[in-house]
Length: 277
Image (cartoon, rainbow, N blue to C red; front, side, top):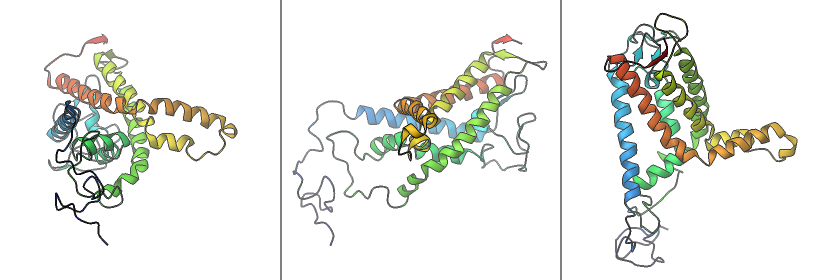
């Protein structure tokens, strides 16, 4: 039997509109700027998505041949459409049409990892879907089914996206090491190396601070005393986990900064500051 409809809204009462809930005409009685945080969250996420989407499709200024700088949005570049020198892992794919980004192999998995991340779920549930947008502010939805139906049931595969994210982080680490390259060959070191390396370190921190990593390292253990090494790893991951939200936002910034810097150097707009040529 379906839930009775709310007399005031005409909608089924399964949440804040249930007949047993107080009938308050206002959406909220809060007088502070409760809408500011959802607005900032939506703006921040939208800005990154728009920038990353454009940069993933433009196919220009993503590789600096002199110093082997490769933007993370194009790594690994595995197509014959990639510029010369940017495909250290080979080109198993032929030329790709413009509608397919050159980083198509990993971008869907990284997008899936972020979308299903526990923090990002909280962020866009509250800010984009307004479910609910803030404490003591009624959500506009008549019903809530949780993550038991499509498309939200896909959230349950987050741990598998985590495994792929670890592999991608290894590729990013290789790119960072490979970027210590001089213009004439051999070792080189510039500002770009600092930016790229810092981005990789923070990406690792974000990845291993994931709730799935915490579960993998110690979630199924019944006796920590019998697994001292895993317990230490679990403890370390747990400490990082408390900063997962901060790392989630920080890495969006470092990804953008890294790509922007590589783009500016590659296009000739700026010159990389070199410490060891």
